[in-house]
Image 1 (cartoon, rainbow, N blue to C red):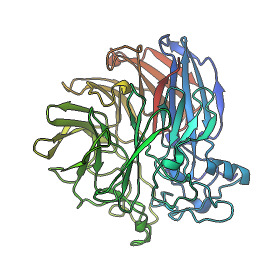
Image 2: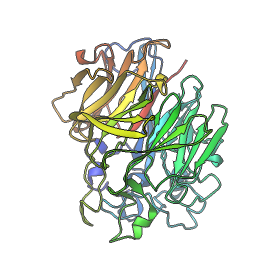
Image 3: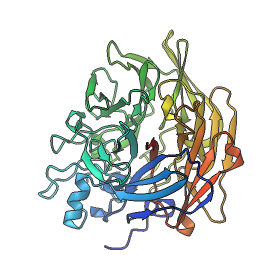
Image 4: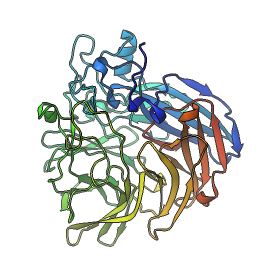
Length: 490
């Protein structure tokens, strides 16, 4: 293989972890709570082969899943490639064989567009399952990538790739033409009901009707509904789950393959601030009408939702708010310029008044934050405790934050080392199965990329500002992973 390109997407905390490893009985400073018996799973795009034509968009890479598994006070780390159809085809060929329509070598080359098909790629899905990994049915985890591939099932202990989920053919289409009957897609940010295990997901594309909902029970039964009156080709990255509704935000952040042929060749992802923000209030039972609420404020963006509360006729929707989507756009850059790091939002809230059909926005702080997390046992049930990370941008997060979303009070802890570090998205694990909401542990991956090593920090949520109760050493630099979740392993 030729040398790894000198590119910001492949350096610092984004340096690819191109090998699989098992590290048993990891070195621990402090003590891992013996009540922690589960896995913290994370996934991200990793460079296996140099992509064709030099395009370095994350979807052109391959998914790498990482697990920190806890059992009786000990920790085991392992990582594995997600062996998607794309991965297997390129492993057989010994090189990258997928060439993307949007394969520019600069900031525009996101590699989300159509694949230029030939004999080696015919009939093979292009997705890499490298955006998120979620628990499903207490027996497997699902690796997700939002576009180009249905969910991939993995074994939660060995991380062995089981293959496409049995319900793959019921997933709606995404932006690209399906290359085979299992060529649909599924969101990277589904929500779930911890009691029933039902997964609340969706697929979206850039032609009417734009959105199809897919609610999946643990036995693989899928309930779907096409949203016939969706307003435009928004990038539907995340949503809120309340007691009664799924709330889907149609924001000015758009995606359409048509942009590739516009101007000098624009990226698939775009920012159209003239579009109003419209919220789809969708009944969780998928019966009855969908209500639309247009926001009473101008363009802004929520990339990742925290969670929601219902107070009378009001839906309280929390999450970091950006002035605009944190991606490079043609309004800001010219062809040939380098990719720029993503920024961060600030703690925010949208409040929907169902009685009056209004929606207002509030900025609750001015400190940059991202990657909101909650006690996922309480998805759709109301909540009080949220967790976030703080820093200048998504690659330089260094502060762990616990926030009471009802009172606004916070606890913070800044992770400091002699050399630069980056915190990746943390996750919450309950103290025990019946623990109150937010009572447990926050597990925080730390890339000590300047030293080629890593740590996992475990905080007791009853004293975040007291610092970690355990630090797990890893003698390798873990690869960048945008998202992940915890699952009990009983």
